[in-house]
Image (cartoon, rainbow, N blue to C red; front, side):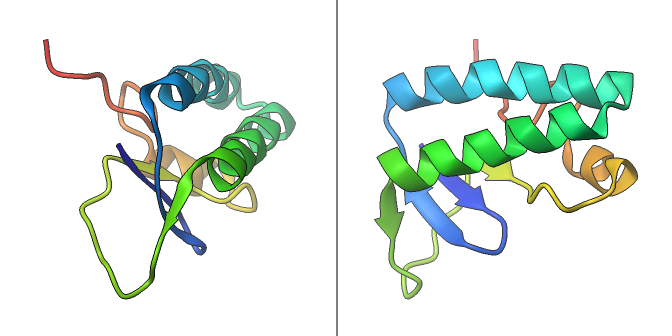
Length: 95
């Protein structure tokens, strides 16, 4: 899958990393629902860190459609809410 970390670029990630990102995504959505900005920021930071450390960076000259977009943690709750789908930042795979 292709993951965009807003403001940093795109990364290719494998299924194992996607599973770990899904756990963090659920935590981020729960924090967003509780309006717990600190917990939301920590989840988003951890998602971005995992992608940067374990994903394969895609060069800036190559623009691919992103399957997942991870927002930065410095957005307000309302700005972050606008970027999240009802299911979170990571869409559910087709059934």
